[in-house]
Image: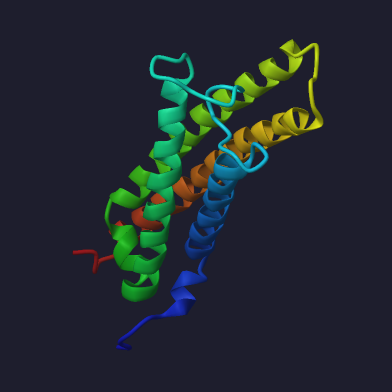
Length: 174
């Protein structure tokens, strides 16, 4: 038995999905942080500031939570694949659970963000500057990245459930 990291495990189908998830989430973090011409771009509002009690605050909180949580979880799972083998990680129920939770959170945040930014663009009858107009595209990109992340996590959910079921059917599961 080899000791030490096995990077082939990190390049398995499940490992590639984890890398893809981290890349998409990192891209969404960058758009969220710098998308409004170097300033924060919000999930829940098209304005340049949010205050306590704003209508979009819940979406903002869930969006921030999803980005931070799943950037860490997907990275840790990938590292677990490399260090311990994906078979050890996939035997436990948490990977499908996290994938399902990510699917739900990113889909909800993504759809709501797309609605907020599409509505803001349709209601803007006077575009005051090109820079504000460019922010609409970034807002739609942020929502789209979240929806894409949701789709990737949903596929990974199916893969992880299938892998777990195969591992549980193995005589050496316990």
